[in-house]
Image 1: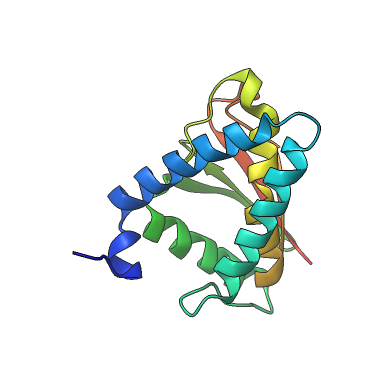
Image 2: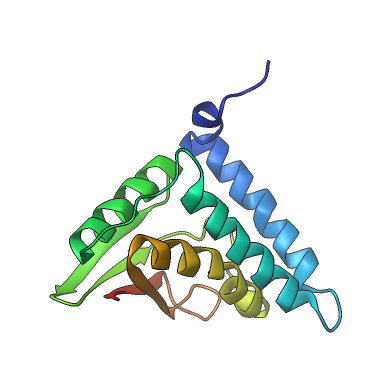
Length: 149
């Protein structure tokens, strides 16, 4: 039986999807000379597709709206996250487990390239996503800040 988009992105199915996607990114990243560019290009376009899809994210005129979009998106995908500090022009959050299961130091590059999807997607939503610390970089969880554009 074929799954509908809403059935596909239940947390359990999303976990398997992101694990497979992470493995694909790793293989692509290893292509000599062009791997990083291929992953970044793929992820940037996937971010645009995700935003503009019929069930995609919404543009917000303020940071509170971007935060609400982020929280709802993480909930739908089953990502374990927690909000942290907040200032008028930015907020901080943590991703507790990498959806792609990246955890080794040799995965830092592919991790950063894969995050281009989120950078593009949330820029279209109205925020500037900055990855501050990562699990592959040695942190226990990924620390990310979202800034007002």
